[in-house]
Image (cartoon, rainbow over all chains, first blue to last red; front, side):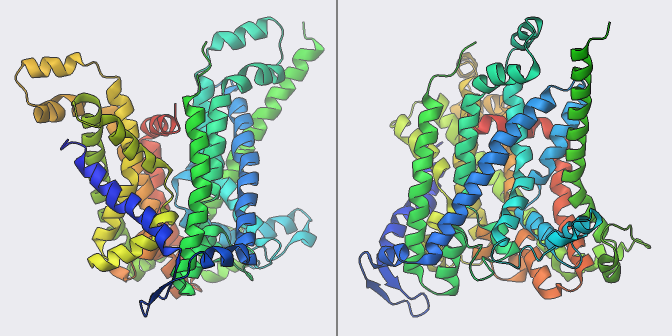
Length: 285
Length: 278
């Protein structure tokens, strides 16, 4: 019993207790400075469903999830298949490692770096567009309401795709090579080999990656804080930053707790899905 | 004999290879740009973003270090070492208890620990602030140490437990026959046998702690207590017009983990692959 005690205590006190407390807090109107708390029932939740910025944030998280699925699940899978198809093992290893490097650095560094890349006067994005004769497309990427969130999402794809490519590469390596060889001998081309062998056999990994990616997309915080703090005009706000702003800047802890409950429900649903997938029988070969 | 399809195949292969290498260059270029900008002057930065610096101003790195990056780095190292040691030890104990010692409610405890995997830190944030204020630990080294450990134990236990399950029970029996207590069996037999996964979990926890932002930002406010991810945003806010120094600070934060990744690649990949639910 002694062996598991520290872990159990830590989790109960610092993970599960706050989770329960959060539900209670979301029913309060709570001024953090005066410390005054009043029970207001479902008011914070009503406020939430009527708050256009809450919906904007949810939409941005959803965009984040959708684009990440496209690039970090499908894109990374195709990329992993291409890399694993290369003849030279050294090149394969080098590419996997290089693609992963952005995932090793912090989101703060990555966010600041892309803040500068998008910066209109010194950034390389506008400079590159001008060099390519696409000067018409230069703009203040993070300074405009219609481009800011996409600028952040693009950074996130750069940061995260190598991690997914690496994991898919590992999954692909676990497929017995005889399968591919047999198919080659039968005259099956590389594209069909991908669709008929690789894709079905890494389906489980793909589903897990999708859930991990979507779950991550609903917990985004760091990069948005660093790159735009949710602006301009709340156009790049996500649930995490709106929660922070509501609680710590606008001094409305009860409302922040209600947003936290929304995040909890979303991540819980995804986690249950993940669990069911992990339990499902694996493909045997 | 050269057939039309084999020529097409060869072209395809060359094209794929060129594309993959080009992608690698596009991916890595921003990081090189960051390193180079750290040795430029401010005016060079604005003149031509692609140009190499005329003189390499390594003093920017010294300036960044003196403007707080040195302190942030020290804090980051301390927090990372302390929380990694605490997390891996507590998780290894838990994994040992769950796999090799008969304890009551084994199944319940397992679920209790692994369920923590699904918990998003944002969800517990508001009550945690209140709790740490009440404990008098708000804005302290302990806040970060406790939070990082608590939130990383589930994942770390998950990895070590999976590894311990594969170790044969005969090992424990042999240790018991030799008269070793459970504690001695853990320290001298089981833990050394888990070396590969322990290294993986150490590396993954170092990476996590070094880069963590949400807790670091909310639970510390004094300069001396801030870790690199938060400190860098301070550097940016305070000296934001001295861009090369900011770039130098970013490079100082990024380089250690990149080096660590290349040094321990094998262990990283193993930990990551097992962690996503093998």
